[in-house]
Amino acid sequence: AQSVTQLGSHVSVSEGALVLLRCNYSSSVPPYLFWYVQYPNQGLQLLLKYTSAATLVKGINGFEAEFKKSETSFHLTKPSAHMSDAAEYFCAVSGAAGGSYIPTFGRGTSLIVHP
Amino acid sequence: GAGVSQSPSNKVTEKGKDVELRCDPISGHTALYWYRQRLGQGLEFLIYFQGNSAPDKSGLPSDRFSAERTGESVSTLTIQRTQQEDSAVYLCASSLEIRNTGELFFGEGSRLTVL
Image 1 (tube, rainbow over the protein chains, first blue to last red):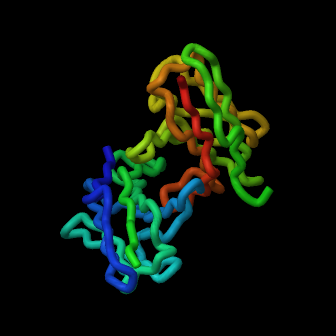
Image 2 (cartoon, rainbow over the protein chains, first blue to last red):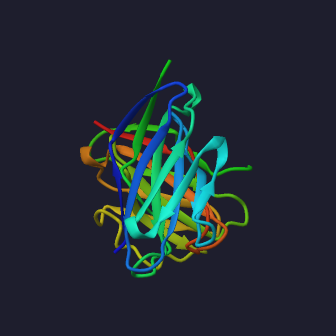
């Protein structure tokens, strides 16, 4: 079965600081990986996705993530945090061992941005 | 509408009552998914539809939960004899088709509170 682990339920940064949200997946075959963002009282929306092309993926709002097969990781980064980045971030995997086309989501990481 | 629409946005019910949650997917999207999001937890997959068929119902938590989809459009998630542990946000998502590289488009969710 495919699974995703997001390290840290909460991450707190100062405005302008580097954002790093961690995601590790389990899979014996190349997976497809996603980051979604959920703003308060809204549904999830796609930030970026990895589908076996370039290992460094750029998304919306200045976010990017790097697929590292050797580390089974897909960490999300942003060089400089903005107050508007405060939200819940979910990592998801699909197409991993077992061939499931249904995305499996991590528990989420709440990003808190301080002025 | 342009996005996934869910209703009601909020539902408060008494333990033992039945509830119905509705999802209107994006027009033309053949795949539809239901997830449950409990407070402080990630997304728990419940069921998906390819067209009007639900190939795998194993994600439904108990036989009190059922779902249907008609006209390859609207879907209804029904919870019978609600229990307090059913309290959660129920998220619906749709995608063009079931494929592991596809983006899911989420509605804003239906928040269910069982007293």
